[in-house]
Length: 259
Image (cartoon, rainbow, N blue to C red):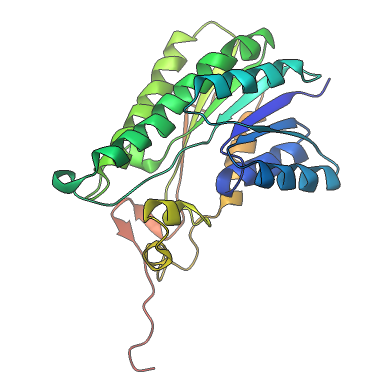
């Protein structure tokens, strides 16, 4: 039977790219996100390409919404073997002394508690498959901090801690835990959400960077990790564009001032 892969935050960016890629790898993808219209379009695209997919509207900050997702997953024909906790995001780039408590709360609720809520709900199905995999899409922000990123890095550090702890607690059970930490990824919505829809500020993050990562690069990493033999656990995969040597060191090409 076809294995089921659940992808949260699947309506755009890394989530949508991951759903497409996993469908191409042979999974029946259960695509979960808040925007029904985008999910429906994604499912039609996957099916047109010969894949299998199901859409389910889901808000990872809602217990009831996650329970509904779990119920749908349990009714699909095939074992649930893969969960990709992709839903997340950033808001603001303010220093700690000026940071919005509401923004920090939102980032913690979506990135950390969302991952916790979905993972808790789906663990029984993953374990009963006999070969479950939990992928946590964190960030290099979960490994090192930077000015203005206090809220986001705090949330991503917590998400990383969740993944590491879960791996320890599941040792001896048939569920592996994989953490993927992307660096600079250019997607259509991450920066817009972070800067409240300010397209100019969002674009400035990638100014002069010839080739930042794109969503498909991260989807490729997810697919590679998830399709290793089940006894192989990729604990953590850190992936950055060539231009980003570290969180604070990015090569940018500036236009010739004489032109």
